[in-house]
Amino acid sequence: MLFKKIIFCVGAVCLLGGCISNKKHLLALEMQAKKEAALLEQETSLRDSKIRRAEESITDLNLQLAEAKGENNVLLMLRGELQDRITQLEGTIENVSSQSSSTQQNLNQNLQQKDSEIQRLNGLIAEVNITLDRHTQLMGTLAGELRQEIGAILQTQYFIETGLEEVRLILLDDLIFKSKSVVKVNDLALTVLEKLSDVLSRYPTMNLSVIGHTDNAPPARKSSVDNWNVGAQQAATVVRILTEEYDFSPSQVTLGARGEFKPRASNETAAGKNENRRVEFIMAPRSEDLVRAIRSVIE
Image (cartoon, rainbow, N blue to C red):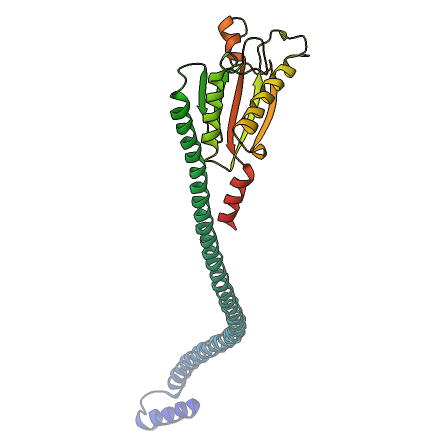
């Protein structure tokens, strides 16, 4: 197409300008044709280069698109797995929450039961304490009556000791027995034993233990084997008077002896020996009565 244009131009020049020689015109036209051919080649090369770059870009884009599709599929798969995991976790949480709620309810019920049991036991303890207080008050009342009755008769030679579980009346040997005797009793002692029996008659559930004590000197009477024997004979004499003369119930009394082996004072002095020679009257409620009273509270 371009070559035809060149021939047409040459012809036109030949027709229109007859003053220019054919040779010069042909040379000029040839140079012009080479320039235009070079430009055409450059344009063609540039166009081919653009086409190649465009194709390369299309290839890269296709690759990126393929990769993106692959990554997207992976992401979709991961999202599905994560969603499944979330669903499982939600189910687990719901189960744990349900179990926790059930456990909490059981715990609350157990705590309520424990609280009720503690309140019940505290109530029983209070009632047992009341029973024990009555027991202690009984000891105080008995001791008070003994002091009133015996204190009106004696000024000395006796002791009254009060504990939580017993009342102890101590009569010295010189008050009870005549000199060097374990069977002959002074008249004043008979009066004291009568008062003792009268007081105890108002406490039919009270037990009485009569215990004979001596100092560490050998027995004065040859018929007494040792101080155990002396203490036992003294206790037996007193128990016999209480039960036979003053109608004290034999079922409430027990006799025993400690001899010289539980002194109240030192045997190194005459006053100490005198205090150690004694008969003790130990009064205490029957243990089975106290146990029965407590059991009646807790059962």
